[in-house]
Length: 161
Image 1 (cartoon, rainbow, N blue to C red):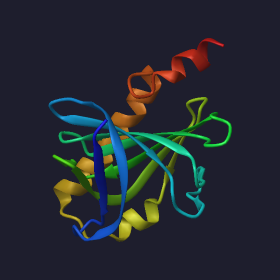
Image 2: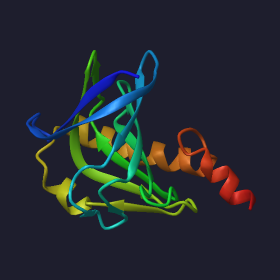
Image 3: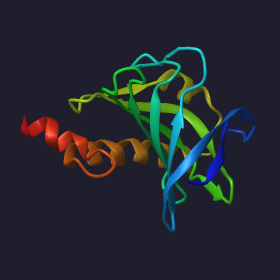
């Protein structure tokens, strides 16, 4: 596996933080990584990220979001998917970066969705085209969840049970 540095940038392109992941799969317009959460606990309002949680992360160079599948680091149980609304990712050799646009969608293991940080998103000074693309991304993600499309494939098994 190849190690890669993930750079989370704010809406103005300034680095907020960075971490390392390992490439699991790479395509023409995406990369899928595995990363272990190495920070203090973060309560997102939808889910709490805990030190040791395992993230499978999809970054896309042609979509206005990325998706993190989160497993409890201690038990391995699926915690859900955390979807960051971002500008399309820049995927290079050894580095992945994306401009976070504050808006997030949490998808619970049963497929229930919760839109987060709408107030923060509303305060950003974004070009109208970026704002529209971000809102379309939420619609696209909800449609993928409803269909059980990748990377939300696990939802099909939950719905059959």
